[in-house]
Length: 199
Ligand code: AMP
Image (cartoon, rainbow, N blue to C red; front, side):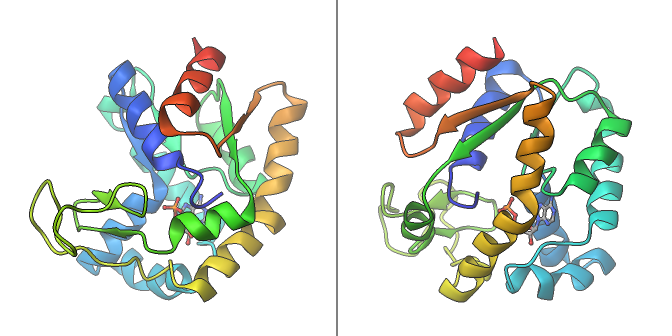
């Protein structure tokens, strides 16, 4: 779920194993920023906290996974979010392990409120505020609140999660691939638990 820390964990795993961290959210945000055809199509959907149509996501994932750097493996972040995506993914690649970071809705809302990031994706929040307000510690660029992290969009994202993603959990649970981890813990503890499940 949004705010569960999946982006932070996926980054840690990607660098630990030397494989790419592929976030569909990051790829889509990059398209929106560059105002590509895809970006123009998805901007409104994303701003409203709704989910992008399966067909677009599947095309995007297929394209990204076919690049040479993904040959040795990869960490997919934010996909699949629907059973249709999960089935398509199974036809494109072999899914070894699925990690679900469970958090309460209150935690999701609390973590996402007050979160901001620069255009390079460095994220700040209540637990790790920027040293200078509104400015990225790493690259010095302006920090902005994501347009899909307004309270209204956040409620919609949580609603989308319940409607579409919960069946995905069942799908992988039945295949014995799902590891459920308590995402309320700190980043380090969550990381340790994930490693126990994949090593
Ligand atoms: P994320 O950064 O993973 O929270 O994704 C941000 C937004 O991108 C979501 O709220 C959706 O609008 C869109 N998005 C990312 N991945 C997917 C996906 N697999 N299926 C549908 N929409 C997605």
